[in-house]
Image (cartoon, rainbow, N blue to C red; front, side):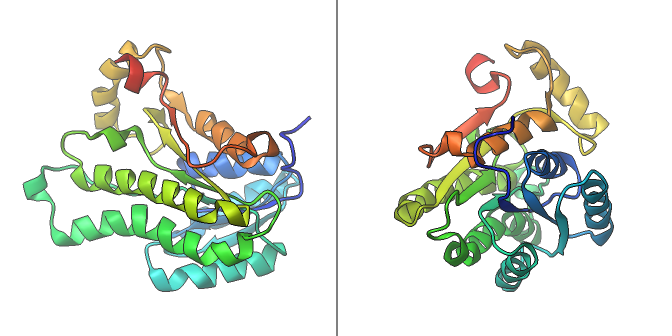
Length: 250
């Protein structure tokens, strides 16, 4: 038995070509959701769509650079037409950089905020007319435990902190239209994107976690699936730390 109400719904998942986004796309598809797979890299999108359709799930390609404001309305319109509607938007696409404040250039600052904050804003804005009044309408934004602030990644931290507040504002403004908006904040998640350097940095922290392990992309995907199902119908404006107890226990 799947999560309540998800079967037959339609979702756009950004950054779904790999990592956490791919896991979210898989989990939603397993729950009977038709998924539009977005990524900036066409090859990743095609591979993911082929995987989902080969498993008997409904999936369509949605190649676009979500950091571009002019791409948002076209992407939402194309996905809505391809799927026949839209109930779920998962803003997962993200990027980052490491370096001190002095090492951040204007171009790097804008690049990180463009993907991590501008993209979710413009996509949510474009999706609102489609989602409004639609049963089961939900937006889930993927932030990070970095909202508390880490050394050497100020642009990333700022973008994810902004995403938290954006989500709360969406929840307040769009609740009367039947749209829920929530944030998931992953902790140390082991995916193919984790470099050996990051793994070395993270091992000591992970060893001290109350749960004592790295998180998986599936841990995040399960949380997203729950937030979009009817069991979470009275949950909005929330930020869920999926971090193995990191924020509270380390």
